[in-house]
Length: 299
Ligand code: DO4
Ligand code: MG
Image (cartoon, rainbow, N blue to C red):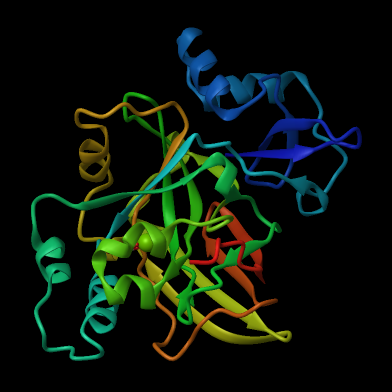
């Protein structure tokens, strides 16, 4: 069972359930966290609540693909974990050492450390949904998507859903100096989530999500990679526990869990590329890439 948001013909956002047989049922709540919290107040679960709705209503006469989808949740904050897969550790070492792969770096240390890397990634205003443009920075020549499983959590850190996230990143800026990490990770439209949220209670094994990333240029596929969350070094609860420790977290926060797919080192994103990230049971997050004209103040 998945949750989507879409704009109806009057351009009003609608919350809906998308069943495994692709039927769309309108839900009475305004957003995903209202569904989660109302279900809890009623001493039930989001899935049971939705099953009650389905029992007394008809599905919409639409194909979910034709809907104008929005972000499935306006996450107040998006946080991200880093270097949680070997593939990410090796790519970070490559960019930090100009390709000297035998060098040991702080990335090796954080991969093995008890404390994971957790960083601030985005806010609702910087985050886009499926089919919406993502931007690349004007001052970077080495930019990539980072396809990641996203955890949707409550203010107490309970994992209530899974979504797809793209942690857009500048390898040259991060590689030049790790203190530049926020600039390598955060700018206008540098994060996307969607197209749906899979209810956590409907996922048997979250360590068996297949993740695929495809990048198209001029209609041709120029990058394709696949990986699985079974390659993750850490446990999801472990990542969440470090995020919430002594912190204030808001309902509907998304925690990205790290990338396990990195395009070849010579690849950089360009204006008009199309990025697709697919996770089984969640859907395909599609984003066109656009350059932005630098609005920086001259120094
Ligand atoms: O250490 C930098 C960030 C790594 C990251 O975003 C990832 O592994 O996904
Ligand atoms: Mg990442």
